[in-house]
Every structure is written in C-alpha cells, then in structure tokens.
Length: 278
Image (cartoon, rainbow, N blue to C red):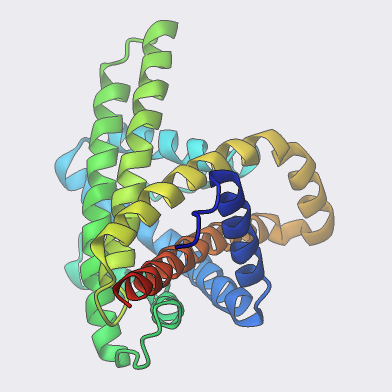
C-alpha cells in the first residue's frame, strides 16, 4: 500500500493539473464563447431582472438594489455606466420577456459542450433540448437573483443613511453573495451536462468556485485602475464591452476549472477504489 501524499504536495499537484487544463486550446475557445454570450445576453437579462423585480418590489428600491449589486461586481466607471443605463420602464409584454430570456440564455450552449467534454459525456443535447434546459436554468438563476435583490432591497430600503447601517448593508450583501453564487453554480454543474455528475463532487466544486469568484471581485477592485487605464487606451469607445468580455472570460475559466477539478477528483477516486478492490 502506497503512502498518501502530503497535503502540500497534493495541493501543488492539483494546481499544476489545473494550469495544464487551462493551456488547452479548446478550453480557451469554450471560455471565450461563454464570455461572448455573456456580453450579448447581459443587458437583456438585466432588462428582464428589472421588469420582473418591479412586479414584486417598488421601482425606486428595485433600481437602488440593482445599482448596489452592479457596483459591487463592476467598479468605478463601468458600474456608473451600467447603473445610468438601467431601463427606466419595465417590459410588460410577456412575449417580449420570453424573447429576452431566450436571447440571454445563449451562455448555456457552449457551457454544456464544455461540461460534457470535462465529464467524458460523448453526446450533447440537441439545440432545442439545450434551450429548454437553459430556460429552466435561467428561471432558476433568475429566481435566486430576485431573492438576492429582495434581500438587498430590504437592507437598502431600511437604511436611514447612517454610516453604521450602510456598513451593515454592505456586509450583509457580501455574506449572502457567496451562498447564492454557489447555489447557482451547483445548478449549472449538476443539471447542465447531458448526464448526472456525482453530487458530492459538484457541491465541493460549486462552493470552491463560488469563493474564488468572490476573491476575483476583490482582486478586480485592487488592480482595476491599472487595468481600466489600459483598456481605455487600447479599446476607446469599446471600453465597457471589452471589460465585460474580459471579466466574463476570467470567470468562465474559473467555472471550467472547477468542473475539471471535480471530474478529475472523481476519476482519481474511482481509480483508488478499483486499486483497493483489486
């Protein structure tokens, strides 16, 4: 029986395996495809979120809650730009809302192919089947987003402007962000592949990637002035589109890395179990 490697050695081996996975050309192709669909579907999803939120909450506090969330994800000028361009009137035509949802779920087409590849699933769903699953995931993720907005609205609406209450609202929102993000990732990891990945591996990957995405937000805040100056110089009027594309690409790489880690751990566990039985 071989001795188990130390925790540090296992951690280094896992990081190196993830870096090797990131060097694959198709991983970058999947991540850029997901990022492009995020760019195309971001504003339609924002319109749907504002429209549906105003069915349950008041217009002023809905905009304040979404503005609060956007500034947490997108710092400085980009957050200001997105907040100022929030739709002022909700879309009340249900046909238009459905069309906006369909246009915002394109992210799940390349993401399903990537997750199927990670888990060794040979057959992808048909396009119509993928769209049906994507709509269900959009509704599920949208419900969680509405829940997040509702929590944020309660904090924003109940705040009287005192500094201590403002800090309490920020801390409350940030504490709720990781569990909600992890739950959304769990739904994607578990139900988007054309198969059923093991539950234990999916839960661990969703929690880990949720924490890493939260850390990415803080890293983005720290280096944002340096990155934003170069994006503005290189891309000019396309500055905000390039920023959303770049941030979405980084987030997609983390999501794919989490899926690859969970599949790799499952394969290693199966190999260890087979060796034990033999």
